[in-house]
Length: 461
Ligand SMILES: Cc1ncc(COP(=O)(O)O)c(C=O)c1O
Image 1 (cartoon, protein in one colour):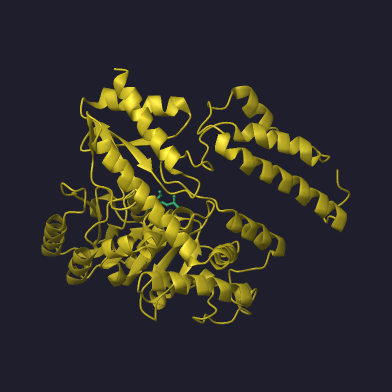
Image 2 (tube, rainbow, N blue to C red):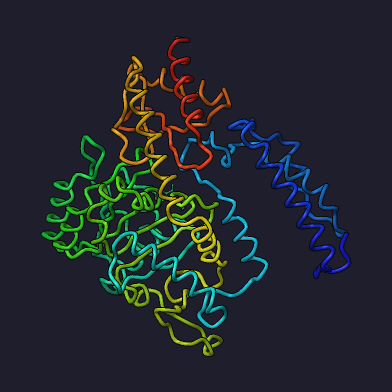
């Protein structure tokens, strides 16, 4: 279709226009689109997975294939997406991502794009301030919470030395699975990973944590890492951060807060008051693609002391001898994490934050808490429904007290309607349904529809 990989100005304009028109139509039709579709048919998979031809194909034909690809699975861009952890996919950040790819500057090391890194550091510093971390704090934007949790684990591991076979990791049994996965990838033996029991409120039980650490110390082991959640995936529960920080410090362990889901609720008065103790963390995982409403692909790790990351991860090859030393204002991100080449994640985050202003995010997060509180109160009024825990952030988790069969039927009824999409979890051996509010596109009407569907399913029994 095109004569060269380098498009002419006119070709660029035409291509951008076609994609722009497609995106506009997509977003205009989104409110009426279903929350999910059937799984993709084998025939469609075969067509979509066809290899590229030797000669190019017109963009309109390709966009038709994109439409086929999009009409399967869960409509995660929709405000009806209430399952797992929604991601707002705000347009400002999508445009920022396009800009970042067009300018294609190198943000792995400080020399390639010091200006873009300065923008990114401004974002990171702002994030550190959101959690009241000290001056020496810093961080890196990664692809998501899993990479951030892994990097924090490696930093904690490095603090106890090259032989970490005696190092123990502690996390609540309700922590995100990426925490245990991170420990495994970091080479921590399964025998050295403790799943600390959660209490009746589903919070990490600090008495259990204390006694696990005491018995490990008595056995000659070294508490290496304590992980607390500032918003669990299942219920949005916040672990007792202050107490966890104290216990970790007494045991000599690194204290990590996994705030991948909940993190930016700290912008709201309600969220910040519930995060008391987060400022004591050695590191904090955040996900801008969760509670900052960005499109999938931007998470981050904040560390109390920048040098702890460098000690664990600094390293370079001879071919990098021209790269200046790391400096805090314009850091070498390659020295602070597993990635070398990386996209300009800071640019899209910066653009979205500066374009909208922080209040826009704060207000939306407040609205998400309101929706969850409203939904919990309404669910509490439905006979036969019980809530796992009062929502602390924006997730409501509930079940039918008649048992798992009924709960499963309610979830199936909700999803079959395609007016909302919900996911489930198991708490204390019982099937629970989750409503997660974290999209700027989720309206009060969507929440009301979800509750009507619950009542409808119960009435059908
Ligand atoms: C509490 C928590 N931690 C970590 C993660 C992993 O984050 P990501 O999916 O961005 O890798 C998630 C994802 O839902 C999460 O909810």
